[in-house]
Length: 394
Figure 1: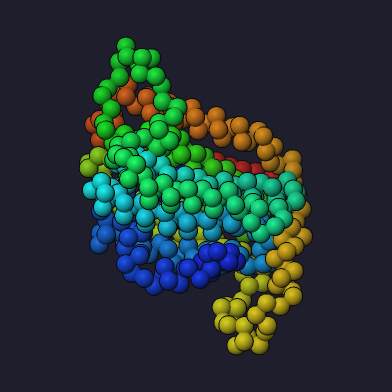
Figure 2: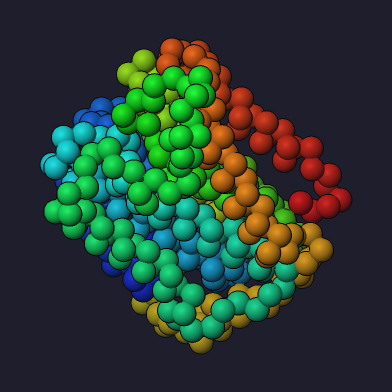
C-alpha cells in the first residue's frame, strides 16, 4: 500500500479552502507527520519528510486538475480524497497517543480504520482510469458517486471519537478480526507465539488491498496514455513508483512486528513519500505543460485579464471524456478485476498473517533483509513496466 502520499488547489469544493490552513498551520503539519510515521517522529527526520511531502502533493493535485488534461473525474476525486486519509491520521494519531500512549501502528482497530481511507482513495483512482479507458460514461451528479467515500470518512471519524468510550482496547482487532482462522484449527499447528501488536487479518487485508490497488492504478494510468494520445501520462506511472516503494516499506515494518531493529523503515517510508509526491507533481506538471498550461495561470484571473470562471473552462471540466479514444479491449472487465483484487487481498492477508508464524525471520529482525525487500519488490514492478511493448501503448 502506498502510505503516503500522503500521503489542494484542486477542483473539489469540499477540499478547496482547507488546504491553505493545513499548509500554514505548523502544529497541524507536525501532528500529521507524527501520525503518518506510526511512531513518535515529530522533530525527527521522518517527521520532517512527511511534513514536507504535503506541499508537492498539493502541487500534484493542482497540475493534474488542469482541464485540458482530461483526467477522469472519479480518479481525480480519488487523488483528492487522499487528503482526508491524511486528516484521519491526525485524529487517530491523537487518540492513539492520548488514550493508549502508543503509536498508531500498534493500535490495530485505529490503524485499520485509518488505512481503510487509503484503500478507498486507491479504488477511486484505479477504477476511475479503468472506466475512462473502457469508454464508460462518467457518473453524473455532484455527490452520488462521492457519497460512499465521504460516508466512510465520517464513519472512521465517528468510530475514532467513540471507540475508547465503548471500551475498545489498544490491541483490539479492526472489524473485530473478521476472517481470522478459528483457534481450534490452529491448536495443533507449529505456530510461534504472535506478538500482541501483530496486525489482524482485516488490517493486513487493508494494507494488501492498498498495494494491489495502487499497482492496478499505475497500470491504468499507463494505459490512459494511449487513450489520450499523450505519452506524458506514462511519466505519471513512473512518478507513482516511489509511493509504491513507500507502501512496501510500511508493510515490511509490519512484517517484522514494528521491531525497533527495523525502525529505520519509518524514515525510509517518509523519504519515499516525499520523493514520490515530488515525482508525481513533476509528472503532472509535464502533462499539464503538454496540454497548454502556462505559468501565468498561477496568477489570479484578474491579473491575467480573464474571467475567473469563463464558459470555456466550465465546458472543459464537464466534457472531460471528449477527445479520448477508448480502448475497452485493453482493460479487464469490472467484475473480473474486482474479484481478482478481492481474492488476492484475502489470500495475501491470511497467508501472511499465519504464514510468518511458521518461519523465524519475522522474530529475528534483519535490517539488510528489510532493506532488500523495499528495494527488490519495487524493482520487479519497475522491470514489468520497462518490458511493456511500446506498440501496446501500455
